[in-house]
Length: 333
Ligand code: AHG
Ligand code: MN
Ligand code: MN
Image 1: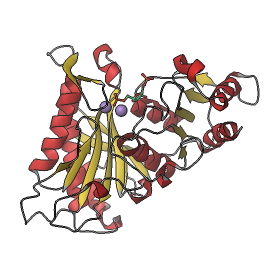
Image 2 (image 1 turned 180 degrees about the vertical axis):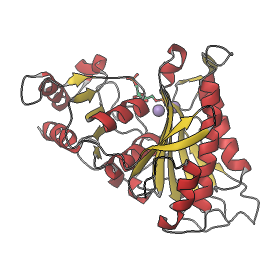
Image 3 (image 1 turned 120 degrees about the vertical axis):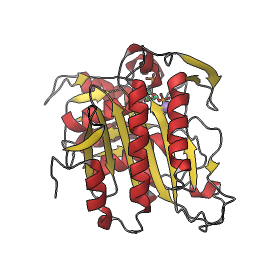
């Protein structure tokens, strides 16, 4: 099945029958994400040459300064998906509330909602370090043809039909799952085409990389402090190596290829951690599980958490199964 010369477009068509519902709607949706990713990639690659770096002068609902590229990427993804009329709703890190797409149009029979982090790792934009985009897709739970409601967005991660990310790195990759494993596609920038470069991606069962912002150490719960000490202590395969980019997408991507754990725990400063459940943790958790890895809040499976609000934050531990299980052991203490 996996053919390295296959383009993403061909792969989507060939695998359409693997989807639970085969109206082609989900394929069109993933196609539009592929298109938006190329547009954002083009702009990210010009950062430094054109006036796209730096702060946009606004803050989002979470009180974070928006960067120009945050705003740009948000607009591109939202416009690409709304103009093509292939979703019924969108939620984004950069929008206070969810967007009901063409809800006045009674012909809008679209079934899917998308949640996105249009630009992940924004603190890295100005310094030429990899950033990403994260997306999560659900079937709506309210009746088709009516305006979407908050219920359509507050679904458990286990209900996701597809999820993925784009990493704008040394090369640009789109990595996604529809619940049948994880596949990675690399953009050939000369042709503007994504090719299947990483079929059936899997986390090694165990690894030796830990990724956490250790600057927050004093504020971490004791279990997290003890786990970090464990990572640094002599032992079988230890001390581990520390790698932290500060872009969840890039840290996760590296750990999936090499074997490792990423964690953003709660702290005495952030009671719920920093990362957002719906458009950061759930999609990454779906990818992790589909790639033989694991994702938890330190105690329970991320995808079993019942979301309460759109921009809800949650502590996050994801990566190689054995490493996540070890971290959970420390959290119990
Ligand atoms: P975003 O740029 O979408 O706000 O996300 C940033 C997230 C995540 O990508 C990263 O791992 C983490 O925040 C970094 O936070 P610290 O700077 O606190 O380490
Ligand atoms: Mn993010
Ligand atoms: Mn973001």
